[in-house]
Amino acid sequence: MSDQPPRKHPDMWVDPEDDPRETEVVAVGEKAVLTEYLDRYRTTFEMKCEGLDAEQLARRSVPPSTMSLLGLVRHLARVEHHWFRRALEGHDDLPRLYRTQEDRDLDFNGAVADDDVVSDAWESWRREVAHGQAWLAAANDLGETFDYDGDQVEFRDIVVHLVEEYARHVGHADLLRECIDGRTGQ
Image (cartoon, rainbow, N blue to C red):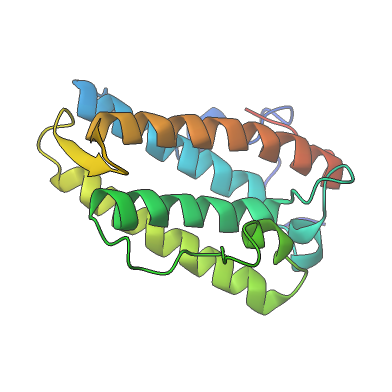
């Protein structure tokens, strides 16, 4: 039996008044809107993984896919790390997170049902999200460019890419969670 009070809207992930993604603040301007979308997807992703144990988080989708919620946590930590630290900040000498020459899919392949692996994944993801949030908060002009593999790329392109990456993987997380315990939601 759950120690949580019954939800008013049992067909929803959370009751609207309890939804951490809902605020009274209306984003205005490109940077604020993109930041809000990115943070909303980050929060949604984290919500989709709440309350699951290591085995459930590591449970794979449909063979031969190696996709799991735990793999997605590791993958999204790697994505945040790559774009903010390696690409935008220019620290391309940093080792890639959850990726090696021998295993380019280590983020998913190494997502095993072990409490230490789960703890490391969430610690990495939260650290990289916080770093990305701080970087974006300090950015003055999303139209500013940086060199990426010989091309001039605007900051905004990376932020939009991250929104796209999270949107895609939140969709995957919806399906993975439904397979685990039938839970679906907004």
